[in-house]
Image (tube, rainbow, N blue to C red):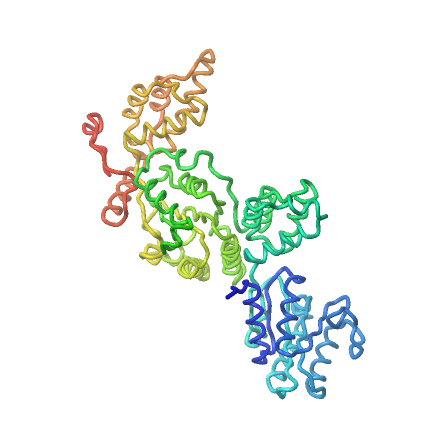
Length: 529
């Protein structure tokens, strides 16, 4: 049995609405030319005649020819003719309006809104042989309030994998015969299809055409670059490039890393055949500057998928309903992207108003509801990584088991982790093995209480000192001097750190395995994992 594409499923829903004689169907899409053929096929299957209206051509038939009974492109005349024909002409018809939202806005739009509202009431009472449906194609779902009781809103999906594959094959089929065999070989074809998931049909076709013109073949890299540009254009999501090194670029956090490696195996075909569910994600809470955000970037590299950051705070708007619309749009794009890592950074700040009674008209509460609903009902393969510093501000609903696969607490790095962080940072600055391991261990012992971010900053500070001192090579002494000039967060915000540790006991899984305290740490009494 062949599985229907998402667009065919949406077309089936529209056909059912035609048969049920729904007077007003509001289709949300930017892809007018891709959606119209589906609407026409749905109307034909339901035995309806299809007519179109736009502000330039007026009323036309499916071939674009003007119809005789409407003399001008005026929207008022078109609606009047529908009303007249519904009373006097025995036919079943679907009218597709392309530019209608512009005529429904402002004081001048009230006449059209009233005309359309009256028409919807009339069409509900017409005989079955005179069934009429009006389809509005709009880039947004902002239905005027006066029409919301009559309209059925359908958000048309972006092309799924099968549809993108058909677009690619069509682009290759237009090439000369001698080029078709090498334009998209099997391995490259699959990669090019995956790279285009999340683009509109027109955007995918443009990417494939550009690649074929430039290289005479389909290059997944060109498609991925276009996807990054499109996401940036939407201004509701942010695309991050992979972190070089992946999990190896993150020092410490051995338990968290092992857990992530096991979750990575769930994406294999064998795991799917075995029956493993797709991983949901992880919530990382803990001390600021201890690697939560860096880990989010590393996870995307480890899984070999894009990293998409959702800034919940930036999606808020002063206009009623626009914040929820931005969120829904962001989630639709994420669902269409397929496998990716979704990064919700400092989630407690964006959702704090939902639990603290913020005077924002309920925007924070609505955002929380939208996020929780999406996390519970999403059907894609996105892996959500949420980070938080202040757990007291997190809504309890977000912490409920089932939202995430696991909740980890990221503490201040212990002595072993401090060595790893220093070693990773030195390698990042092309200074691998410059400082002997024994000397690095001494620096690690002297930096007890430092966060990962504070440790990482020691290396560039030491490099400045070494360069100023005759451009010599960096030493452990330079790192120690740099460390002596830092007052760590564990001292300036000791109360906050202790509150976090107290909260984590019994509530969250530690991201780092316990280890025996060194003599220096035992003396300071600082190890708390």
